[in-house]
Amino acid sequence: MRRGFTLIELLIVMSIIAALMSVATPLGLNAIAQAKATNVAANFRTLQQALVQMITLEPNPPKNPDADILQYLYEQKYISTKPLGFEVRYNEERKAYIIKYTQSDIDPLKVKNVYSSIEIDDATGQLVLYVPLP
Image (cartoon, rainbow, N blue to C red):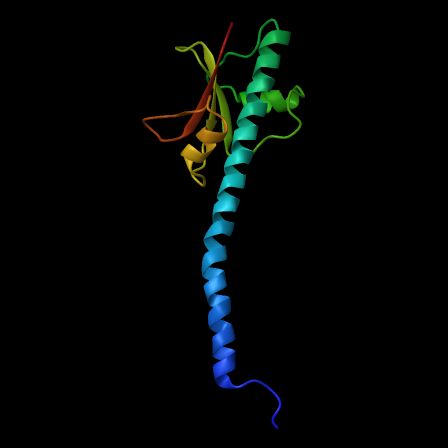
């Protein structure tokens, strides 16, 4: 009697593995996308809390529209790391700080489902969060 597998047996095993992979791959990709959206939402929440803390503690928080408020928050130790893809600016018209996610590597609706305070900018499609002055 011969030892080993026949070609048919190997093809059957390979087709079963391919079928399982076709089911598992989309689930894995969706899980990764959801994790990224949750991470972005958490960064929005952290930056919002840092801005509220800055506004509360400082008598004259920076209001220059050209200033990099994210860098300021980092230098003043309101945040421990600068999250990638974020921009924080002051908007004089709205009298508010605007947190903006500038990358397009996530589904904005997934982030909005995690943190409903976030808005989607109609003009650019970017995620934004407004932190008004008191």
